[in-house]
Image 1 (cartoon, rainbow, N blue to C red):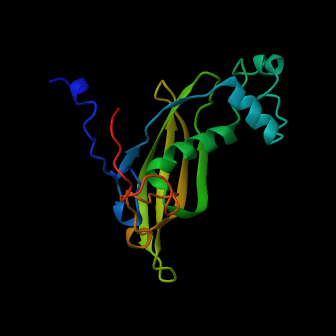
Image 2 (cartoon, rainbow, N blue to C red):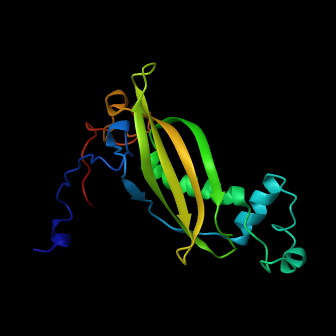
Length: 194
């Protein structure tokens, strides 16, 4: 009997917990998280960021000007590189952050050009409890971004305040960001495959 012959059988459903991010207890000094999904930087990314932030440096939007510089072409706006690298790190570092307390020691080590693909990783530098807040702890990380040639293009220290698991009470029914009662619930009727 093939799977198709069982088309009218009921399919048992169950809610399965997905990745819900790290909580304060999950961080250990010295851990390094290589963040998934490299991202290729496009000209559109650079044009939008340059215009939205009113960055008037012609290195970012004037090809004729940039062609005469030591780089020979436009550079990607450094604040875009920062925002992209931080965004890449959220899945591993700050999905459960209640606040970002600071970005320190920001360094652009190499230029980023249109067409470069960036990858990011974070290393846990320290963590500490707070006397004033039982529900969170502070985690300090170093975020590093590399291009497709393994050139370090950015490093910075990032300090989020991260929720503790016992206060978050994560579950498959209500993962971070989902209000109660939205989507599939444990007592929903099973459906049949037709």
